[in-house]
Structure formats: structure tokens, C-alpha cells
Image 1: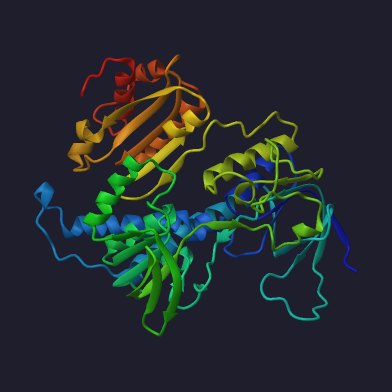
Image 2 (image 1 turned 90 degrees about the vertical axis):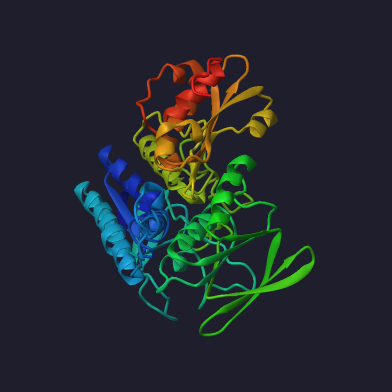
Length: 475
């Protein structure tokens, strides 16, 4: 029988939540062990096969479009082409590999012990680390046995697979879509959420004809309709076909194509493409590492129930990231990681944010934080809105990107900002300022008195505050 190893703080999962928790716990004086099974590896889904590489492909698509036609700026049109193999090599080696090496370096710098293997929980106090990969029948290697003072679970999530669309061959998930060997002539995207819409736009810019099949009445569910309309306008300009109210029924494929059958208004139709990406959501990884052998409680969505510090109902076990309630976002996991590590160290930390910023890297980008108008109404909060268009912003116009707007949602009585939204150029980079405004409970006058440099894309934030104060300047 293997010797039981006693550890201080053990972190399971090396993704955005796990590696940040390990670093912060080490900084706070804890001796930390990080267990990572290697699929997808340190940095997790986001860094290896998710939000980071997808932004690299989005950037490549933008560069290609600019090279093909910048006649608006007086630049002559050229016959630009793309070497997609070289693009993929750049994405994998210069972006992903560089960032994952950085994570490993940071963990070593903070003297975090890294164990490569798969953690399997035996009970509330003990786990085993076994070799990753397929398990051999009658394998006598029971791995390393570990107990802990504190255990932080950060096992992440995985794509949802729907009936008749098994991820194999030319039916792919978002990971497969990011690693295609060639740019498809025809691409079907099932699911018009933020992942589906981002990759649809990326491949449309790279030269694919894209069809989005969305079961709901609109793509990008959760964002306000007037924000979505700005993105839809851009998508249609790129030639993207958007079919809403469409339920995917079946797929058939051969060596060169896939045919998808879907239903709209009770009628079945088919569409053929080189690849079909299914992106209809993600499910928490709470079902594959022995959590059912513990007393840890889950909710109806198979997420771990935690308090404001990430503490589960089992003493010494904590959970963060995609396996706990809330949006499955890397920056949420970052925050929760620091909170849990701090709480273990006795700090008065808490996940007490007012709103987590959400960003969608479509064309144009979208960002929001806090409450929208309908959510405020549901909470019984009387609000007003102030909105400024990018068409009135000199920087946006000079970038030939005048579509979209900035909107502040604030209380009618004291004019405290409870929500904010942007659809337009640079929205992702401005989301941080919106988050600061909302989470600090700033008044519109506070925003109005904050001097924004001119000409910049974030001036419409101040302009919207001007409007809220009743003294609009540029509208």
C-alpha cells in the first residue's frame, strides 16, 4: 500500500482558477501542491484551447480583411492571401506556448509543487493521483495517496454534446474549430452564443461562408436586443447567414463534408458544409473525479454549492471557477481563486462583486457589467438610461468604426450607476472601467467629473454621464 502523503494546500486543476489560487496561496505563506492531468494542461481551457487562441484567430482575420481592402483610408486594394498553416503555427507557438510556459514559470517561481496526473477523490479527506489517460483493466498502480489541510477544486468545464452530433470527424467542438487544418469553404455553427458568434465572425473574416443555427429567437442571448442588432448587421455584411428558431436534429458525414438536418417552424431542412461546430454551452466537470465519494453538495445544475469565500459544506474543501454557480468566465475564476486562497490564510476576503463583466469579441465587440434595464426592474429598482453613440466619437469615426454605443443604467433617485453596456470598437478594453464604475457604486456625476483623454474610444463613457446629468455636450 502506497504511503500517504500529507500536504498543506492542494489545488486540483491548473486552469485560470487553479493556477491563480496556487500562486496566491503561496504568496500568503501556504505550501502548495497543484495537480494537473495535462489535458489541456497548465492554463486550462482558456489559455490552451479557448479564449486566448480564439482571439489570435480573430486578430488574424482582422489583419486579412484590412490587407484585402483598406480603400476607405485611400490604401490601394491588394490580392492578399493567407497561409493558414503558418497562422496556426503562430497561434500555437508564439501565443499559446508562450503563455503556458509563463504560467509554469510563475508556479515554479512561487515554489508550487506540480504533480502531473489525474486526481481521484476517495473521501472527504483523501485523494489519489493516477496516471492520466485511458485506464487499463486490472491496473495495480493505485498512484500517490494524498491528504490535505485544505483542498481547492478548480476542475473547469467542458463543451456540451447534443444527440446525433458526437464530437468526431467533421462534427467538432470549439477546440476542434480552433485547430482546423484548413479554412473551410462552408462552416456550420450550431449555437449563436458568445463562443459560436466569435468563431463565426473569425472564420467569416478568414474567408469561410458561415451559417449559424440558433434555437432561440435571437443569437447572443443575454445581451440587449439593440446591442445584438449592431452585431447582426456586421455579420450579415460579412455574408454570415443567421437562422434562428432552428433545432439541430441530425448529422451525417463522409470524408469531405457533413450534412446537418435542422427544423424551423415544423419543417425539416438540410445544409451541407466542410465542418459543423457545436457550441451550445458548457457543463461543469463535477462528474469525473470522484466527487460523488465525498459529502460535497451540488445544486440541480451539478455545480458545487459554495459560500462567498468559496467554502463548500465540507470543512477544508473549497471550489472555484466553472464548477461553482455564476458565469463560466476566466476572470471570475481569477477573482474566486484569490478569495479562496485569502480565506484559507485567514484574510477577510469575499466574492462580493456587484457584477462580473461579460465580453464578447464579435465585430463590433460587446461588453456589459451589472444590471440591464429589465433586470433592474425585476429587482424593483427604478432606473434611467443614458446612451452615447460611437458615431459622435472622433476616435471611432477616424477608425471607420462608428457603429454602436455606450449606455449607463443608473438609479432615478440618487443616480448611482448599477449597470453599463458597450457595443462598439474597443469594448473589451473599456469593460474594466465599466466594472470599476459599477462595482464601486459610482454616481453618474463621479463619472462625468472623470477626465477622459481626447480623442479616445472611452470618451463616450463620460459623454453618457453628461447626458445623465442633463448637460449633453456632443449630441
